[in-house]
Image 1 (cartoon, rainbow over the protein chains, first blue to last red):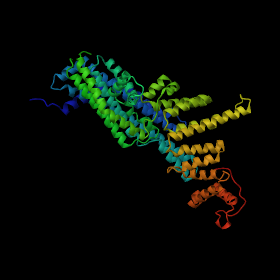
Image 2: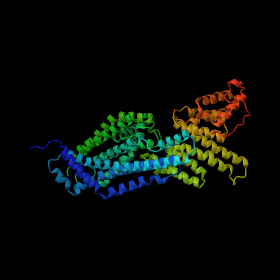
Image 3: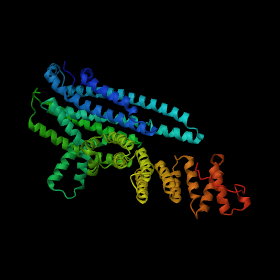
Image 4: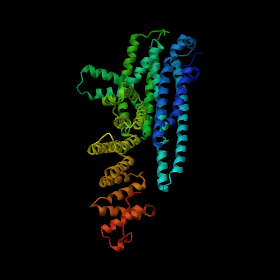
Length: 291
Length: 266
């Protein structure tokens, strides 16, 4: 009997297996623990005023989440193919009727599951710390403010405004989307990389260039006083690398800027488009690669 | 890692990546535009900032950690405060507000430190013998505080709070009642502004010579709003304006009596 061209069950099996492998690694626990400590202790970092405290808490916690997710996405994905080759498990898998694109999709799915789990764990801890601090500050405000009911209401509204806002949820979702994009990009790089370290280095470079891409793009599109080779160079930077600044929305969300849902969904869609493109190109390269 | 990929295939992937980049480019530009309209991605990270925060800080800010870098520098500014390093604080505030221009807390506290703490410290500086120079430095710090708030307002024009803070600075540090009245009036025009801001605007207007009629109209309008606005300062100022404007007895809100103006504003 001929195997189907695409099997969700096979992809899920590889994905689950990859996920299990990843969460058993010590580096995952180390990084997760570090991020959780950062998030948990963020409320102690600054107690300048109630607004300052929430600002610091959100800055540190979301910053820790962002660092951890980006690091994990690159480190975990870059080591997937080298390890499978080294341990020769890739031969066992691919000798079965498993197409290479399913193998890669399964691997990526495993990483995405791990990133999603990490986002949920860190996000829940962050929100728990934030809400606990909010309750403490609200209780203090009630106790210490002996003004008119109007003033008390204004102070309470101010505390609530400074603490939890619903925009934090899509903000954290965007962090996950960015890490998935990076995982897909790293998977693409690892299909032609000569070692895991090489893949990590190239992905890290792509990460930094991706954040500068918008500068190159604006310079290229302005076209003012440029030689043709400068124009070509900036154009290549702008076209080859993704605009990673598009996913840095938490900086402004923390500052109280409201995230419109159309901007959120467009950013998610852009991240999804890039992740799909990198996956497709990874398949294109991996299809004929000698193992 | 073993295995090779044909260079032609690698070149093909690069070409495909470039084509996809060209297809996604208008989307990226449009998304950047929508983001900017919503208040995102408005910070320009340029070389002057690179000089202020150093290479590693600049790299971190560029890599999507602008907000944590600002938080870190904010903590540093508080250490500078503990050491009363006012000049260093001013420089750090400049950087923090450049990195996070939409955080009103940074503008507010930075202006407060400059216009109150630094200014008072300069006024009482025992190392400076010249009274004129002490006053001049003190005034310069107030100017700096005012400038911080004005820049904060330009970056957050829809926020009542910084207008209110500017009003307080002009009232308490500059004794510029006309300017304070204008700032409080602007703050009160926002729907989320607390009720007292409107009263502040009227109180300050009452201090401006030649604008008694306007002040009276505002105070009376507040009085008409109901009991919650009829606070002692409002009643006293209303009485004073009625006296100054010679409002006929029958039209007066407050019966004629010797007016004692309390300077407290709440």
